[in-house]
Length: 127
Length: 286
Image (cartoon, rainbow over all chains, first blue to last red; front, side, top):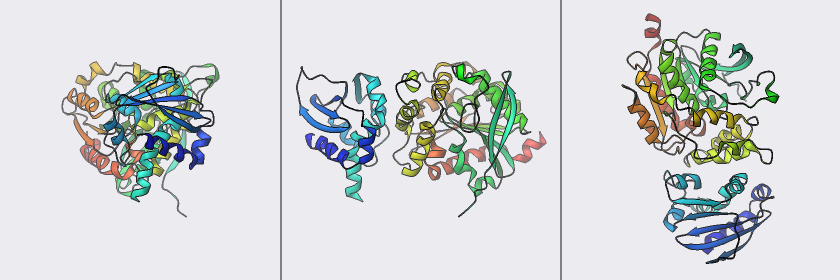
């Protein structure tokens, strides 16, 4: 899973439009996958560090809680309905969103596109 | 270089006691089909249908921008108002446009909130239409988001709205049309998407009226996309089941904005829907 997040960090640097979209995004996001914690620290759109948990002393702005199978399905080139988008995953009960929802929504396009970078990378490999 | 067959004009009408200047587009000739856009968007969602010669060969496809949307300005005094769409104003707007254009019982085709109002009109003003195509439409859904997110002084409501509605666009949609669809949300006026959602997520008055729809007189066909998580196939199926005689088609690879996000995928389903609507000769004979 750490590799996927590293893929995101590199993917952001390769996409200037994401750095423009994320220029005001300096937050720590907790992504919990099947009980494993990953703290993604963003600084002005750059994903500067990914730290594994568990941690009770790392503050985060919002958290996305899911399972490995759901996330792998989300990263497929053509995910089935419900796994194609984080809000759809929440609606089918395969993702929970916790914390400061408004912070998430204010940067929603940036967050969605960053999380989907592994999908885009697979599409590029397949092409 | 090419010139599309779509033409646009402005209709002046008094709606709910206020003067409105409404932008209307059309293409084709034959049976009139009046098309309604979704919340937070405009007539451009119907651009592919209006450019489809097979559809416009026998149908006069007409769409208009609701007041506050697209090229229809908000009414005088808007600057001090909170925009909140209501069922009554929405129905009056559709009826006034049909009257202003001199349409004789058009087919009414609406998507999302447009589909919701189409079903309201099917229940309350069936004499004014010949049939109803309700796309991504249902009896009622409460919001699974906070509609106030989309109109606040510290963030761009349009960009947030677009990022949210992207949830309902199918991954099968061509990339260019996905972004054309999102552009309308990004560029809608401040508070307009929120005001539309107020109608869509708070007014449940259609629920008790569905049983009043007489599909023997005016057929009702629903279309829903499997990637729609605002109006899910389950929501559409529940709605269709409550309308005696209504029919439903599920589009496995489409989402909430099918005519705009994936025109080629939507086309066969819209043709199927139009084939279920009364032929022009039958409308004239009645």
